[in-house]
Image 1 (tube, helix red, strand yellow):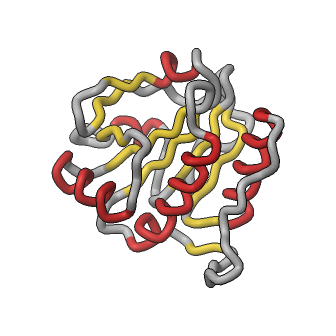
Image 2: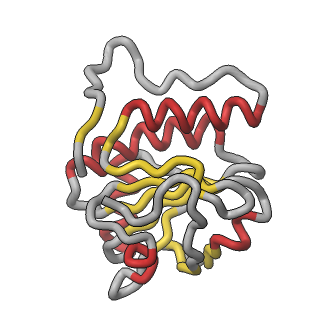
Image 3: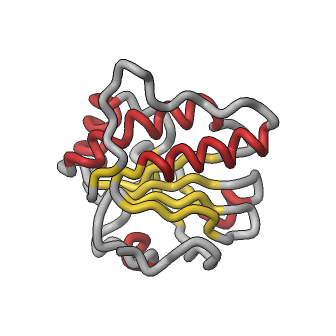
Amino acid sequence: MTTIIAGQTAPPFSLKSIDGTKYSLSELLTRGPVFVSFFKVSCPVCQFTFPFLERLHKRYGGKDVTFLGISQDNAGATKEFADEYGVTFPIALDAEGYPASNAYGLTNVPTSFLIESDGAVKIASMGFNKKDLEDVAAELSERRKMPPAILFRPDESVPANRPG
């Protein structure tokens, strides 16, 4: 479970990415909503989920919607994960002691949040949840006035959910 649920204010964070860039939630929110997903590189459900998050990012990411992964691992392992699973959106590192993960009350990964520009959590999702990802796509497509992305191809066997 996560202690942060839809309707609550997302806790602030300020983290460095694998390339040294600093990401602050308050700064990111000035550009628009933020989709953030916490993960560990050894987590099989994270490995399954992140290619779908990359599909969301390719369709909706840009100057007015930020996608950010938050890794609970070191920079080297995180870069290997990003390369292996085709993740092109930025990934920040939750420093030793996991201050961001703890602020969000995480007990499992992956855990993802769609955070509105005002800091309110619109969608909180733990593990892999097909409906939650479709809801994120619907929400972001509505903002952009475009049809929702097709996240799951007919030739893919995608379960409704997989706990983290």
